[in-house]
Image (cartoon, rainbow, N blue to C red; front, side):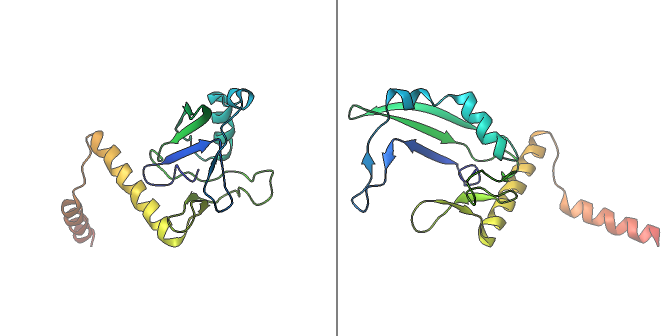
Length: 156
């Protein structure tokens, strides 16, 4: 959900562990771990927590003879993704919270701040305007405003 609400989405690489200050450790995954990354199973689980479907792809990669999973998450299509239920792990995911990737400090997923909320709203409005434009609609602000004032005058 955090990547879906972040501009341009993001990547999750599975098989890397924190190195405790020495940088990441590229451990890779076992064959059994790799086989657990089934798209439909992950999709069902992720969409069970999100207010709208999250678009992602799963890739398998080998680096230095170690196997990794790379998940590419797309930015939301129309509206930001909201968590629709609490996770079983207390405090991990909370119903009604919008998550995004932090821009400062160490990379992590966090509840959106006031600034990020405003940016999410603006991106959603821009996306909705683009959808309407593709459908043939166009915004005519001055014309609508003049029509409104004319209708008010006629009403009085």
